[in-house]
Length: 52
Image 1 (spheres, rainbow, N blue to C red):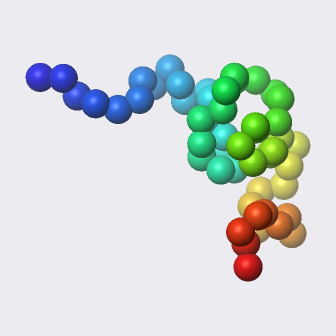
Image 2 (cartoon, rainbow, N blue to C red):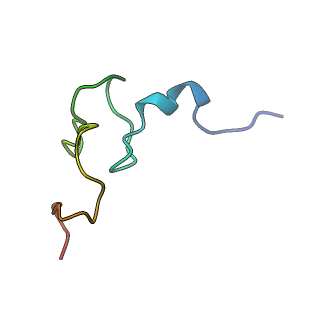
């Protein structure tokens, strides 16, 4: 029986801020939300589109 889902090898491409898959792994900003590894965590005074 086949089980669905994404391969675990894509884990390094998941953005820690928005949770979406990035085009490429690495230190470049996320092309979905613009977050970088240097950004403060969500809720630490940073605003995001759609936050109210």
